[in-house]
Amino acid sequence: MSKKTGIIFFPAFDWAISPTHPEREERLLYTRDQMFEEGILDLPEIAEYSPRLASAHDIARVHFCVPGVEEQVLDSHRIAAGSALLLGDKIMSGEIKNGFALVRPPGHHAMRVVHGNRGFCNINNEAILVDYLRRTYGIKKIAIVDTDVHHGDGTQDIFYHDPDVLFISFHQDGRTIYPGTGFTNELGGPGAYCSTINIPLPPGVTDASLHYVVDNLILPILKDFQPDFIVNSAGQDNHFTDPLGRMKITAQGYARLTEKLKPDLAVLEGGYAIETALPYVNLAILLALAGKDYTSVVEPEYDPASFKESPQVTSEVKRIVEELQNLWANRHQFDKYSLAKGKKALQTSKPIYYDTHHIEEQQIERVHLCEQCPGFLSFESQAYHPDGKHYHVYAVTIPFQACADCQREARDNYEASKQRKFDFSYLQDKLNDTFLIYERAQDKEVRSKG
Image (cartoon, rainbow, N blue to C red; front, top):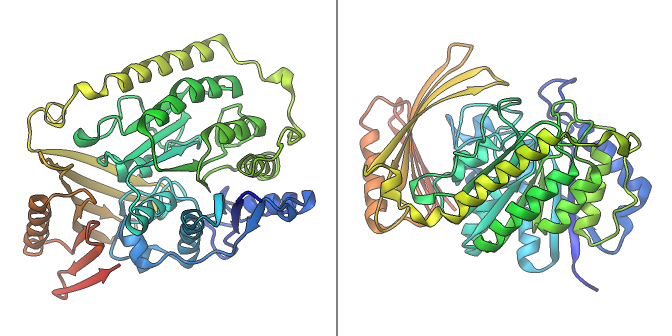
């Protein structure tokens, strides 16, 4: 018998932003009922697993949680991320061929620095999975394809300067929906140009134009990049009934996308039509992953007559695809120093708003460029909380690909920050799987080693 498709359900009964919030446990309970009713979990092609917790170190490998992981992350977050890690382990061991983590809370709006919840997300499940796989199994190249109606701005932030992680996001145009980002000129940092591909689609896109994008842009780029592992950040709020989006994608459209993309692991993100979309889309995606017939999965509200796409939408989609095809084809014409305008370091100021907790963050990101490797990153972040709390922190990241000179300079950078007036200093050493936190008030350093 061929290998199975693994699945984990985690509805997170004990976690909610509010009892009536769109991101609540019912998002998965209707799906669970539908799958029981259809007998899907009894199929020999499906294997269900129990979740496990991601460790604090798994999270610190990716995030700078302020002041620490324990203050930002609950068990529900750790289980959602840990479910993806467990399925990743099962795939890498050969026990299953692919997997679907049907979990909440979601994560793709959580950025590298975490001061609270934004976009319903505290930690980034897919990013934690990616760095876990790279560290544990030595995987070189990973692709993340984000199919949520909202731009995966957190995932983009985390991997924007990483040439070995390809992030592709198609989403409703940021001028019409949260978080207002994800445009075609957001292409990755100087050392990772075109490792980020954003496909902002106009409202009203149907299955036909979505699959035009898949066939003519996403699949050719994946073929060129040749990833060792593909993660689908599986948001389902592009569905035609979703209350937060204005797209017209069906369960059949999502299933065909999954069949073409062939992700190793899909991790649930958004999707807030709890009864009219999620049970059908989740079922269709699971069947597609398992290689089973999904053509009978049709939503009760589906009416083919109402799915005619306007000529303007079709034309705009084709224009965007052509623009990105040209950018991808010419990506090798640019080197990191020409993109950085000859500078050895590139500084970007970022105002970041946490819409759930109403936190205002001011962040300065510095990319320290290098001829031998992608360089290292440093961050200065100030966050202002509504209750009057204020954190001023400094953080340094040593990437997996860092050369000896960049490792030394990054550590010097971290040590120097301890003499300045930051509340906390952090060193995230991905190469040696070490994480340090220095608390200035107590003149104390805490070390975590994977």
